[in-house]
Image 1 (cartoon, rainbow, N blue to C red):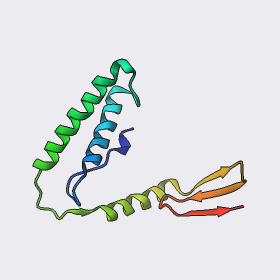
Image 2: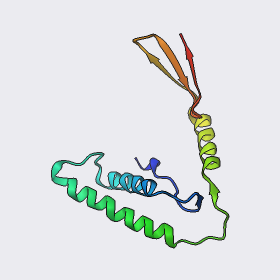
Image 3: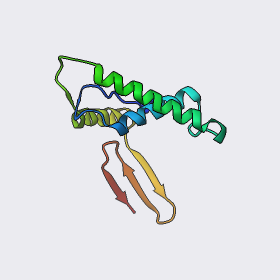
Image 4: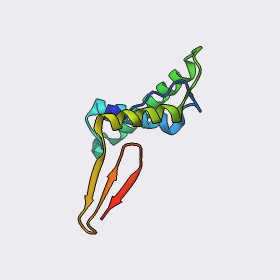
Length: 113
């Protein structure tokens, strides 16, 4: 689960509230072992997400660096290239229309009948 938590500091544009909350959600999921809490635990789960998001926000806004901000698109492209190198292409076959879609991790799709 925690592989989905990405570095949020020193990017241009800065991390959004949604990115901070998403990272907090993944962190709480990892700690609790729940992807979705029961009704009995929902309030505690949601409270933990908000508290961690607040702490993460405070951390990100208080950190300083002399390094140039990183470009999000450039970092994402490097991550996609690394994933392709590691995992290669993914083939998904749809039974209904007998079309095989090949996805590479960079997002390109090719279809064969």
